[in-house]
Image 1 (cartoon, rainbow, N blue to C red):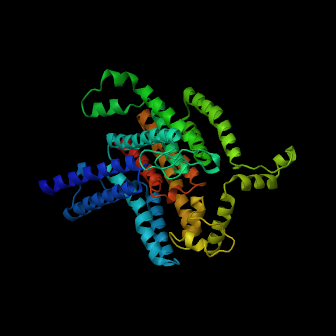
Image 2 (image 1 turned 135 degrees about the horizontal axis):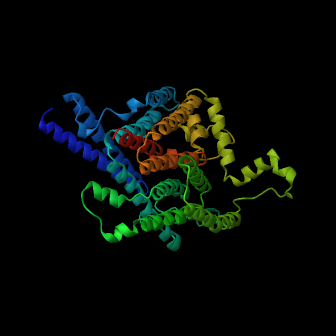
Image 3 (image 1 turned 90 degrees about the vertical axis):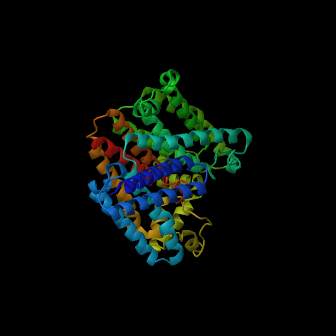
Length: 451
């Protein structure tokens, strides 16, 4: 491998990494930007890979063979998932439409995962990637608060969502639930950084042999805590029950896996609950979002399946019917599903079904489109990820990076739970988030256990 080839490989390596940083920062703001930076990342990654294959050999500064080689079960589950999606395309009722979705959605996310594993190889790369995501979240929160006060966000002119008299903040996203899904990830990551007493500024300054100012050194934790409360305020104003649930579950996951959690976080959570839960209930009731059965409540009803089923159907914003429709489609196409990206088309053919593009449960919609085998493989991918992750985390030498890795895993856990009640995995902006978080966690494991 001559010197010019090495330079080109180094340039492609940097270009792929900076495209990833731009992608992370752009997630809240634009479908087009997310698509552009995804394509650029994949292009640089593939050119880099092909050039290495052509000239042979591996250059230590331009990527390795791929960390997935150390996790064989996870690797083969991903391969099986890709293959099964391709089988679903062949059996699809709209083959051309499904084939387009196969390349532009499903395969794109898998290749992004590979690109992150290949190009995010150092600790500063991980911090820059997460820093870009948190910077985007911070700007989105400021935009959301401006939207809350003025009625319109700054970036895309999105109006305050007043459905069901909720006055719900969506910021630069199209829907408040999307902003909530993004902020629950940012919030849990911030908890991990605060728990670990981790400083982006001090770490990066040490790596680049420069010293931050005394002001930033002294006040960095308070700046990060201020960002955390900003994220929490905006998350509360989305009035997204699924995002709140995902955040709470992810925070509990983090506390249990980390065996400790700061008192300030418990106090922040209690204060947030005292402020937002009554406000949430008032807003929802004003908009007739929750209409409890008109019966006097009793202990017998508290253990009655029929009562709580009625409560769910009245308070689920139509999800109960959406899920029934998705289950009907999945039951009629149990093996390969109706085909990628065909859910809304198939739904129209079912008499009595609700009108909608999504099932508001990503896993039920996945079962409807790629069958029960496909959705089982998807769940097994993330299950095996957690099994391997906690095996490797035990080997960490640095407790800060152990805490950070658990935080990334907890953010992913909360996001996946949020997807049980919403459409995040089918969103252009949020669709890659689960795969990105998994890849970043793998990158952290590699940098810590192989250093």
